[in-house]
Structures are given as C-alpha cells and as structure tokens.
Amino acid sequence: PLHMPDPRTSGFTRAAAVEIIEIIKRTAGRALVLFTSYANLYGVRDIVVEAGLDFPLLVQGSAPRSILLRDFRQTANAVLLGTSSFWQGVDVVGNSLSCVIVDKLPFVSPADPIAAARMEALVARGEDPFTDYQVPLAILALQQGLGRLIRHRSDRGVLAILDPRVRTKGYGQRFLASLPPAPVTHDIEEVGRFMESVA
Image (cartoon, rainbow, N blue to C red):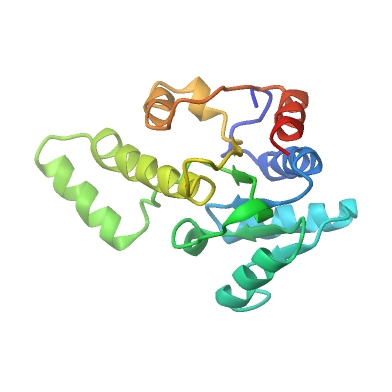
C-alpha cells in the first residue's frame, strides 16, 4: 500500500495492524503474517485482538511451532502470526493458506554478528554491503516467504508487502523483479474481488 508510513517510524506498527485487519477480512483469514521482529509481531497482535475479528488467531510463542502449524492447517479461516522461523519450512496445502502478508522487507540486522562480519569483509574489499549483501539476502528471504503461499502450479493467493520501500526506494524494484509475474495492486477492494474470483 502506498499510504503506509516508513517502517522505521513509530506509527508503522499501528498502520501495519490496520492494513492486516483489512486484508484478512477480505481473505476470510487463511493468512500467514510474517514479521521481521517480535516487537512488531506482538504490537500487531495486540491491535488485532482488540479489533475482535472472528478469525482464530495463532501467535508464535503461544505454543510450539509444530503445534501452531498443525492448528493452522486444521482450523478454518485461521491467521498465523510468526517471525523468522516461519519464513521457510512451512507447507500448507489447500485452502488453509490464501494470503502471505510481510510487514517489512526482511533485511538482516547489522547487529547480527555473522552479518556484521560479512559486511565488514565486503567493505574491506571496496564493495557495498547493503547492495551486495543485505539486499540479495532479503530478496531470498522474501522469495522463501512467498514460497509458503505458492507450493503448486495451481495455487493462487495474495502476497501483501506492507513496507512502502518496495515502491519508494531504488532497490525496491529488485525485490519486485525477483517475484513471479503477477498483477500488482494498492487497492484493498481489488484484493477482495480477487479472493472472490478464486474462491
């Protein structure tokens, strides 16, 4: 969505929660919401719970990962909120999953010791650690997140990227170009119409 604030600002979590609520209303739940931090996950969780939506809400940390995945597969219209461990290795077949929502582009934290060492080595070689390391790694993570949704050629669904940098920053085009060809919209009503057409 074009109206989202910069994800580094304090208003982003609330704006993301509002957008997530509107999306899952149109997808009738059936959504995996992937967060880049626990702080964002719990902030959004609180707002979603407060909204009183009529969809079962499964939250990372409330049960073991395997139990959450089992419940997500077996519970109609569920919404699962998760962080990095849910970006890969999640296989949900059928109608239980029709939407993957990504709160922010999944850049690795510069505070991560392994990432910091790799970025330092790139700087020493005269390379740009953001362009040559962080962006490609984040693109791979985004592709893995999308892979939760599209497991078979016949699968259809919505990938919602709430991070406006995918449109406002030069590197955003690299993210979009890495995804399979698909219609792109910023119109929440169009998401609803698409979901009705594939139901």
